[in-house]
Image (cartoon, rainbow over all chains, first blue to last red; front, top):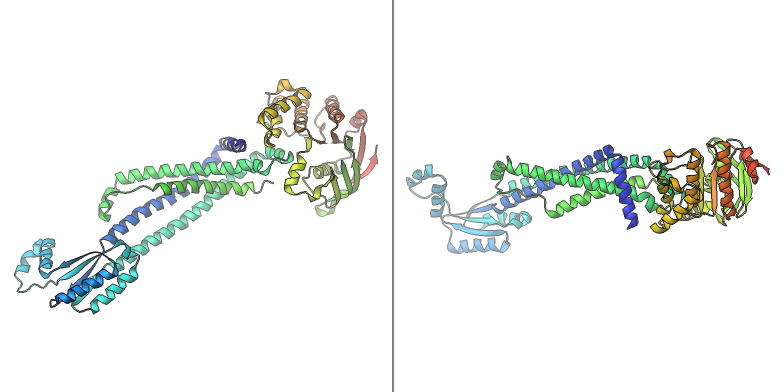
Length: 296
Length: 219
């Protein structure tokens, strides 16, 4: 405990002594973690959008006019057994024309002049959110249904959902690469700042070495200094993210949210905030360790 | 206490700082190392502080061959030494009290013991009244007495001093040597490197003269 107090005291003094270079390291860490946090925040909201869209993803099974009751039951049973459907609705020909009239009121009158109802009956299958991850099962069902008796055509939204998933994955990968590079830059900046601190304290270190002070006592302050810089940088990043989040939510994001189908934006979950804080401290610790290892 | 057997230290370009040097310093002895600049005095002290290892030969202190010590053993060994340098090596940002207490502090001595021991040695070197001053506020002689107090605070078995009076006038030099004599009188082995032959004559202890890394004279 006494050693820890000593490390923190020495580290704080050193940070105050060389506050300009320490501020640079703190800002670099904050920048790296801000980008990471921003990506995490965008990612978690994007996941919600994709989830919401996936929930509304549908498979439409258009039925032939001469489909029998038995064939319909058989189709429904096939859909139910795959487990990819969250909800299944049978739309009769009359329901289909009624929906058309509702969706396109300007054209409603034209349907009344038709001699016979051209709209096919269908089974509207709303896919379960888990179906996005079990694409194979959905594909198999989509391939099988057109071969069954009474089915005229099958259409569903998988292709664009899969493209959306790929785009999200790509953005995430780019983000991780940027975060990794910023992380390395932050650790190296901390290492340089701590190295400057080590230089400023070289006489003290020499005396500690000459009197046989334990390595932990010699190296501890450098590691503590790195951890402090990392921690302060992480806190700065979290506060900045919170400010950006509040501004974004209250300002132009509202319109975008409506377009995306989200009513609210969410901030980072507690676990991600804790991970950012710990990550910042670890980055700082890494920088401190790089220097501490050279002090023998 | 200290034994060197055919000790050699070779630096780059084939320059020997020490060559085939053998010596013996008994426990409780006071020995001067003298000789011109570059004779090998400081190199021998560096080897004794285990800041360097010999190229050849053996340096044994208290029965331990210094070249074979592990990092942890080096630390333990250094705790049995006290060192004094020509440039004092005091920490300018710390007060006299903090400078002396720094050693027991980093060695993990309990706080009450640190304070008692620090005050004892400051009193012993006669500077307890300056304990709140900073090194820059002290004269050269006072700074060296603080450095001696710091060397003593850990109650070492051996004191190593490298040109401890190099920056002091003759009267102050003798005053510092008298402190070393008092330390030695209490049973501590003292090894002082100096090129001041007049000082050695006035103190009157065994002196080993080095030249080109060899002992050329024993007085």
